[in-house]
Length: 473
Image (cartoon, rainbow, N blue to C red; front, side):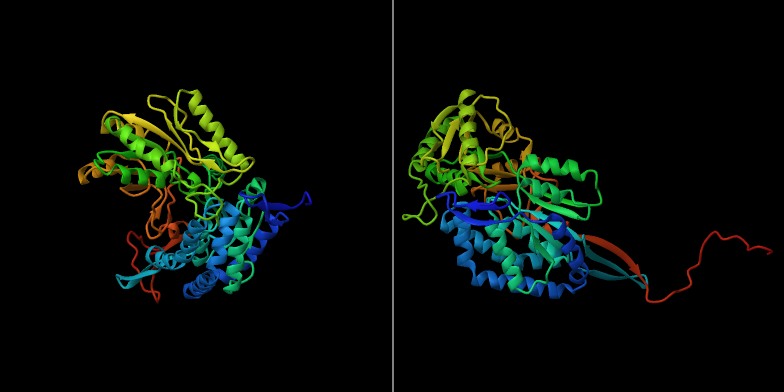
């Protein structure tokens, strides 16, 4: 392979899935700038028609997309199919969201017309992540294009083939040349794109550390829009679940270990009443021991596949070792189960009473904290700079209302996995989890800007108060 090429590999086998040359950021931005006036000038109905055609192309190719997602990320085929379905469902939801939140409103006012209309920002960059390599960038791209922006899309360097697939589907749907521009590359390419002077904004999904760097960079350019979807050190409180211990344990597993723990909404910290902890942990370890960790197309089908690559696996193993070194009691060890491949058996560590760094460990590693009462549970849940997701298992309506009111998170669930989020609701977090630009249903808000107008069809006499006599009078 030439040193000028990039490649992505199947994390299960190491097989090369895609390879190609890094993109030219300047050329991509210039192409978007050239295409912008024609695209922005089209009526919304025409842009929506092309988005609908894109949806139809995706439906025809849904199984191919799912298979590609599974191969490039290692996630089970059943889960990759749910991601492909979410990509398809995003289009109709985004059209409805644009019309509801960002459409045109005209009302009569004292013989005039008061209007609120929206304009696209211009050329927007989208930096995509690897964990949901089709769904998450699609959640930025579709609203941005509907609003009339031109887009430069850089997929994660770990999942470029999924980016190519999405771009090909847009082309097949009839999207004009230059409106969506794919640029491949490493983190350095992303930095070049973010810093390009002819960019009007950036939409990012990824780590909090990178998000902080972008926020500092864009502080110097307040005229450019910036939407950040970042991670979380998410708490899950288990409380007053009574006899439903097995069901509670199932929710914990689905919250902490789905997608091999590689979702920004995965539970990282399980907070449980001390008197109920032993029963819950017994049920939880029983499930952990039964989880099938295997390749996407294996039979029987796995619950989870590998993490994205060996570097990610090594970072997680180091994190687990640090927790143990700080006094954590390992209940189930995070272990590599296939030599030289990133398959990990989920880890569970009791960290009760320890003071630990507020970090997001992006993988199947769950920390348990035992607390004496619900006030202590809330305090433990909020002991983080992040604020993306939080969940409560058990309790009654009154307890949940208290939990909802006192928890600082943008996604708050009750008796559901922390990873549950609807595309027709806002998605975003507080603190280090974002910059108050929620996505999903609210994505329409950050891809267009409002223009308020007072409009009269003719010039009419408008008396001016406070006029003096003219010269010579």
